[in-house]
Image (cartoon, rainbow, N blue to C red; front, side):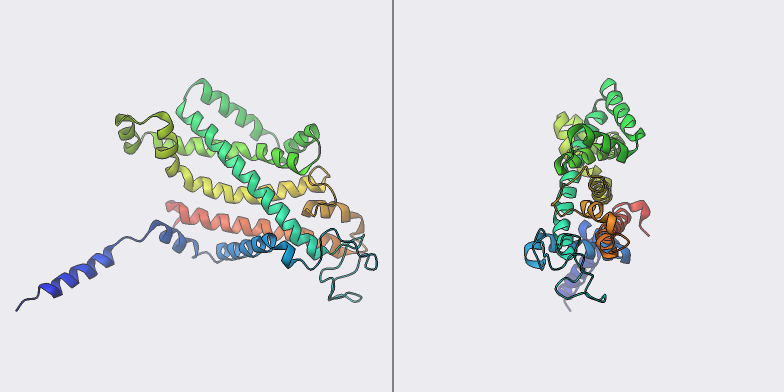
Length: 305
């Protein structure tokens, strides 16, 4: 009796069972094991969608002043109205609308800061790793000097020199975050340079730029992605701190730190003016930290269970 079809089917089933999962599937499976990371990702997605569609989601224009509703309390407090769910500030602007539009400012500026710091850090880190000697010493000692200074203090000094504005505050935060990406890129690249695939690429005649960007860098991206995620929360926090000190976004821009600064004098009479922008900063920073921890566990094989 011919059992060839059955044997072929058995071989196919065994092959399917032994087929390794896709790397992205492995990462996602490891990531979703952390409930905190999933919660952080969900919060970030919701806030990002609200920021993108802020003109539709926000109930009022962010700079519109309602002179009949100065320091109106939230809707659930006595004297409040569903017209202003989170109340209004001292000049009658809707706090909920300003928080939603502030998410657009904070997230877009934070993304720009992280991307520019990441790209600059990768370039300098690869240059330092591939040029052991004076160039490496110069770059790394400069990064050590920058890391020796308190990050917020250095950002304040930079903005004080350039002048208070959102762009200058973003530039200051980029400079503050740069050393972390440079050191991480250099360390990851140095650990890859001695491996067989890099040596084989050198023997095959690959140039320095090809080795940097196509051979070594793809294998260094996992820790850089984690650092970028955690750096996003730091960037938002630093931008809010500079805005609170009057060195970041200037009124009437709806930025969370600026909202806190302008409402500080009303903290005793109108607690909602300060509480809700502060909660927005807290929730976003916590969400990015939770997601970054989950990514770190998923991308680093040494931390997988």
